[in-house]
Image (tube, rainbow, N blue to C red; front, top):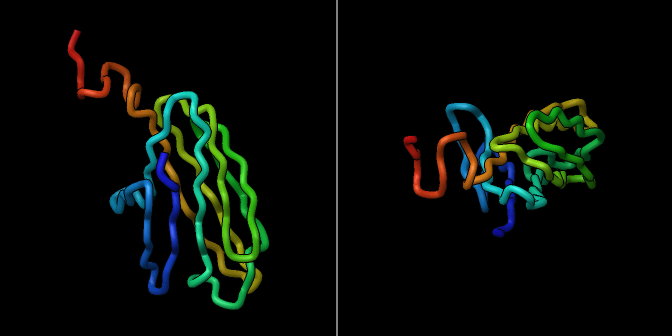
Length: 123
């Protein structure tokens, strides 16, 4: 599995490795095996400047996720993904700014009922 990495840069630019950014829905999507544990790291160093991350609140749907954060990074560990799950991370920094990072994790073999690795299956 590739490293799941997001770097938030100045002027709201981002670098994403291991996933794709869905601009229409405002979230980063990663693929994960059905029984796999995925770890995504969000590097906020350029965005927060001299401030530090104070809190991270997660809202999960369709998966189980936990977080750990340092002064400028957030690490989200995801497990138990059923088809497709989302994790919304509300990140608050010491100068009062807040940023929502939305992550979606999908299982490629069962991303949607009626599909498999080769696309849609008609019965």
